[in-house]
Length: 74
Image (tube, rainbow, N blue to C red; front, side):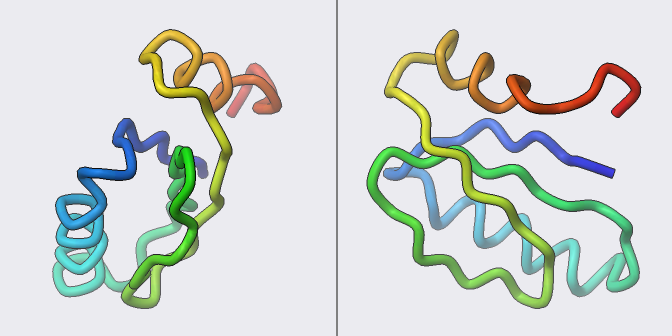
């Protein structure tokens, strides 16, 4: 199951904290986190599955890019 994560490069520490929290409180979660990025692809995933999606800086284009290749039933 895909988990769309709305963030951007400057807020990467908040994202990493969220992933760490998932790893601690729900280590067997079935989620694959779709993470938008503009330049940064390095991340401490804390055992979580992640997919990086290159996006533009605007919120509309970020959401469109994150949803673009997902099937409707996902």
